[in-house]
Image 1 (tube, rainbow, N blue to C red):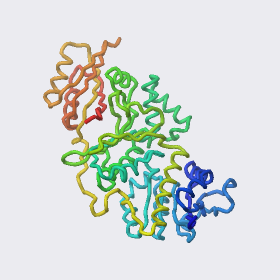
Image 2 (image 1 turned 90 degrees about the vertical axis):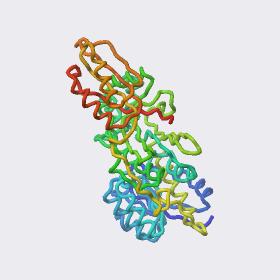
Image 3 (image 1 turned 60 degrees about the horizontal axis):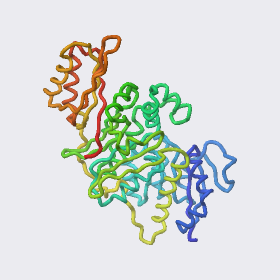
Image 4 (image 1 turned 30 degrees about the vertical axis):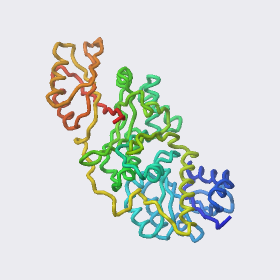
Amino acid sequence: MNKSINLAVLGLGTVGTGVVNLLKDNTEELARRSGHIINITHVGTRRHRTDIDPAINQSDDLLAIAAADDVDIVIEVIGGTDVAKEVIMHAIRHKKHVVTANKALLAKYGNEIFALADENGVQVRYEAAVAGGIPIIKAIREALAANKIDWLAGIINGTGNFIMTEMQTKNRKFGEVLAEAQALGYAEADPTFDVEGIDAAHKLSLLASIAFGIPIQFDKVYCEGITKVSLQDVVYANELGYNIKHLGLAIRREHGFELRVHPTLIPNTTLLANVHGVKNAVMVDAHPLGQSLYYGDGAGAGATASAVMADVMDLIYVITAATPSDVPHLAFVPEELSDTRILPSDEMTCGYYLRLTVKDELGVLADATRILSDNGINIDAILQRDAHKSGLVPVIILTLPVLEKQMNAAIKQIQQLSCVTEPVVRIRLESLDE
């Protein structure tokens, strides 16, 4: 074996402990693959852990660890954005390579962090920040480097997918499933980041950057959660041949890029519609390859530790190669990142599922369809259900793709009809085959 590679693991929560255990369990295999002995010399932790090798230095002084002479690679798995940013920037200034699983940090400060890394001649790797153990960053940044990516669509939050799966397959209500997800440890006590789409938006901003060669722009991602998806809409979608999934979508358009996270109807025959439970999956449409799907565990100690150590292995090659060849942080050389416009929400284009609750009167459907037609919206399918005991009738309309601003105008007009008794329910629809 050649030289030893020394790691510092900052944070001993689920992921940090998973990294330590993975290295302990697979020491020989990692050495055979890398040609080097890989050691953990420091761990950053608030309390002393008796289950950690006593040869490893334990400390809560994260800045000192990040600058230590006997550290080659700093692994940041403490979470949050403030302390994590300070530690990572400190490590980079001390010429340390960095591996992080922190999607929120990179979505907010990634452009700044990568610029500093370039200045200091080090690498920041972040495979574990998106889709856990699925190697989607490496696939887009390296394996698909010869392709022009037209769009990607991802189930990139396991909690949201678990909830939508239970609603679809077992006819369970949102609140009931959320409570179970919390009891199982899939969702936090405050599930806002998961169910409101913020976590997925963090990840999508990173995927879009490496797919299209644009700066990270989390603040321009259209974000909508799943809290308003009702069981009746899941049932109606199934009857029409669709599943509702909480998707992150990044789409190349003629005048810019769409970045959006929201509940989405997708045909139940597609592979992505059949990704269930807490699993993650990302579908990429590229030229000349065509469509490819990347599927697996999106969270958990094992999956995330696997992605972290994959980044470590890549960095070992960078550190030890006679002539290092770095892969650009965002897949494109920094001076070639494009300032192409991110389209605002009213310029997004997609199909729509609309559910109207109307009085059982003649001419109601004619009025609604006329408004859609007047706004240049073509109807793909209509489903009218039997009247409820209250005398109200659910009407479901599927439309062909149209600009969001046209749909906004149409919904506003439909809402003003005296026969429409409740707010119009809108869920976006994607065929994922174009």
